[in-house]
Length: 604
Image 1 (cartoon, rainbow, N blue to C red):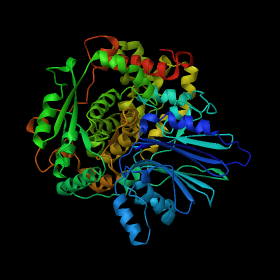
Image 2: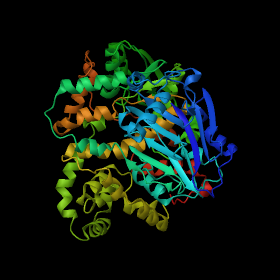
Image 3: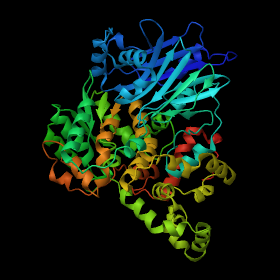
Image 4: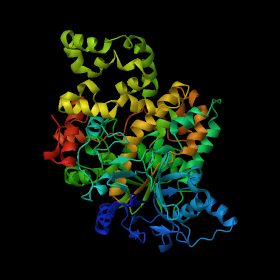
């Protein structure tokens, strides 16, 4: 796990960035890789790579980056882990390839030399990769199918720059800081900035599951090689086979344990993390587990500690319960905002549990993130299809939405105060994308002029095209409701918020967070049976995956999100229910320190 950066001056007339600028980008990501730093430039200085290292596989200097091939033709910087690298290395060795060490980075170099871009189809893991081919004068950028690892680019004056963080690119003064209204609008709609947008016009994300080629002709369009929706759509339909899903889950956890350092686990009181711990136990591990405790939740349903302790005892984990207080939250808040690469209304839980597991001396931890998206655990798997069927026909009537909102504001203002989303029921459910937006949005498009300058909001919505953005996550169509919602939740909420929050919060503590339930190979195994995941079935399958069952109290606990009393701490009140007014309040507090008050085009 690392931080990568680099540039390619692809136009003859372009002036390459200075070494100082590249070093500044690299060292803005120091916490992503405190174990080492590297820098390489081509002889003509038109290409430069930089790297910060967190040593996980092959701790020796043989795993250092940037790494060059033996013949000097190829150079690579890579962030992530390739969990099947040992099998790929054995395959290459059978064909006569010799390796200096046993890092997955070196395997990637050799695999690219043999297969070119087609190597991406062979990789199992999380990755953001940059490979330079000096003979072809060609840069390849690629990102894993789910987008677990970030990769951002900025193109200006014939130079492409890339890095693992938006804020790292901003360390180069040549990268414009002009705000993108689409990023602002996206944040207020979703609580996070949806890719490929960022808060800055000059910076965009390489889309998940895409590759991008840059050569002397210019920057090519991002091309998909592993779309989540496509995997689900191509799977067909098979009867539910619990044993097959159990085997696939166990296989994914086993692969995610590959490391030359100890691997821990985040442990809540729920099924997802408990099942991951149980499957680690089945793989012969007795890991350290970290659970957060909050005094505000003591004796309440939100208190995770007793259930987590029961799971830890069941599987023999060394259990660390870490109490987080309001004073610690306030003390950490400047560091949280500094680490938060893009604004988010979540991520505080990831920050503190990462802090806890790092205090235990670990560099790697598994998380149960992704179980709901894979196995239909969210309520949206019922509410989105039901809302689309119930209101879809009505909402297709011309002018129904605007007319209904006007009537509601006049005749039922109290209803709108209690449930502002009622105003979207008469037009958004016309499409799957609109229905998902209605159910998942923090604010709806017609509410944005209450938190942004109206002209800025209009420009942002036009650039963002939220319904088009969501609709693209559905293509190709899965052919059934569960698959559609799984694709939407994976490509929108999980990718843009949960995975991104895990990345910045974990990396801020020099911790690699691995997500075995977010695995493209696992998705391929589960997708043919997704259509059969009726309410509660998928999570029941996950709960019974370990050879030793989870404790009954965990199995029978009603589903709840992992709660943190953020609003209580931020406002100094003894409450923690996050309502829509809280979201408006918190979004303002997030944007102000990230952009600076003077740069905040915000009306709240």
